[in-house]
Length: 96
View 1 (cartoon, rainbow, N blue to C red):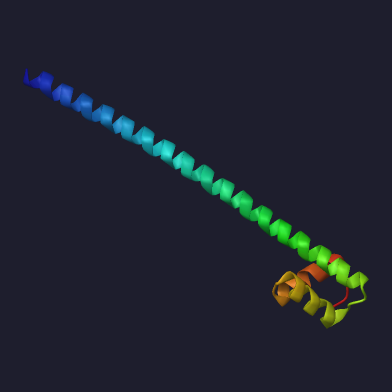
View 2 (cartoon, one colour):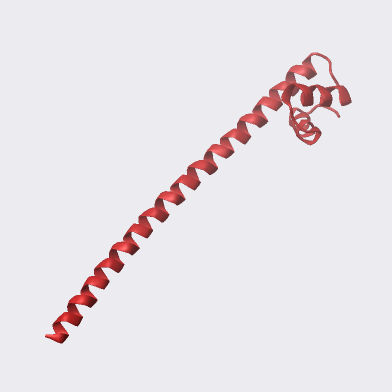
């Protein structure tokens, strides 16, 4: 009888352990998926921002802005850093 009780207890512990591991694996998979979606959204935001600055640089360049004026205009309209403006200008192919 004592052996049967021990086996039953060990079986119950094993079942609880398997269920716990399954729940942990599902929680990990959900968390990983949420992080992946967040990462994709962040990349899309960065790509959209770069696209916006690119077209701002093109519009200002077509209006005759050059050099430092072009950089300042992009910074002012795009609310970005000078380094971001320089990158947009270089993508357009304009001279700094």
